[in-house]
Amino acid sequence: MKLIIAITFALLASAFGQDIILRSGQSGQFPNFPYCLCKPTGAYRLDSTVTFKGNSTYCFKVRVSIPANCSDYCCKQADLKKLEINVKPTCNVAGVVLTATLNGAPASINPNFELAPQGPLNSTIVKITQLGLNLSNADGAEICLTLGTNRGGKGCTTLEDLCVPPAGAPPGVCSTALFSSNNNCCPTTDVNNAIPPAAPPQGPLEQSVRICVTCVNFTLSSGPGIIPYNFTPAQCSAYAKAVAAGFLNAAFQASTEIFQNFTLEVCSGRVVSVCGKFEDYKGALVAPYADALASEFLSLVVPGGAPPPYLLGHTILVTISSEKSNERIGRRLLQTSMYECPVAERSIPLAPSNVSFPKCICNTTQGVMPFATLPFYTTKTGVSKGSKQYCFTFTRITPLSGPCANTNFAKVEFWANDTAPVRRGLKGFYVRSATQTAFTFLSPTWSVSGDQTVRATGLDWNQQQANGAEICMELDNSVSLDAFCLGPYSMGCYVNIFDKSKNCCPLYTAIDAPFVP
Image (tube, rainbow, N blue to C red):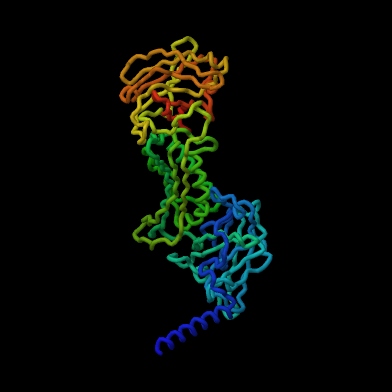
């Protein structure tokens, strides 16, 4: 009997709860923001930091940022109709008037509070609609929301009061969604409330300054079988100058300034760090530019076009990190800063490009044999009058496991222009193993016409002999290396190392020098 009564009360309670939801017009079908079925990725996003303009006005900057490998409707065709913000139901009080602008002009329709129709009980949003944006005009658009109270002074006038922060986030962080006209696309962004830039401290320097120490870090990592590349001093210096210029420009765009200019801090092997300092509230003004700066700095290492061959098999990571501290100028230290300084991350893995060389079927994967071609060749005057030698150096590596791991160095092949005038410019090869001091001349062996392949054969070097061996290609001065070697790289040559079976043929590229922006 007690069981029957308990079940009856449970059913009544459930029915009562469902009745409340139904009468509120909220189905409870989607418990989490944005409280509907839509794709949370797409072509649009908001900058992660909101700009406070005073008078309870908060501005959101729109960016067109299509995710990698996304080609569906939401990424390539969708428009941007409305912005929705997840807010507290207690802010939805009678008589409150919200206003909005788009790029400084009044919005077509004033923002309003709404109960989320498919959300849980009392889930509430602020909606700014009829934006009329698309892929051609959305990037950089600024949507500003002005909060207000009713005549009785009730309402929410700060983002801390207004927004429901995501789980674990502090007050003032807002969950937002940008919707297409068909409501199928709703890329979401969690945005931070940038505390309004207060005037810098006045009076004597008995106070301290809250500081953001901001560093741009360039880091290389490589997989097995790849010759690790180390940044050169010239590259470090160039990156530092570009980072300093980039942040100066961002500070200018944000109408602020840098406390301490960016300078090179670390240039060691596979890591470069360039650091500067902002007063915290000024760093917060530059923070919205961090993503674009990280992309700009990544292009310093990997310029447009074919990626540098010495970085193939590497992943390049560029991070912008900020740490907060207090610069003591007097006796007193300030409390920990609440401002958000620049933070961003960009990375790219680089895989070898597919090229139509060699002209046979074999394993071209770098690292399959215990040998590799160093990424940069050297030059010297040729033996023949009016000629020049391009010398390629080989090294021993720890190979990938497999049938090619214990092979010898039988020959090399170059991807070369075999048309008659160019072909005649090759005088021959001068080769020297690591155990020899003198070079030996080898006549070139050309493949059939049209294969565009020339060989230095009969080497049969073991690992000791190959580790430091050189093969110098002597060209008449009338034929440039660009004319002789084929492929996408200026002043570069593709080199295959073969074993005797011809099944193993790792393909490398050597160029004249590393890229310095």
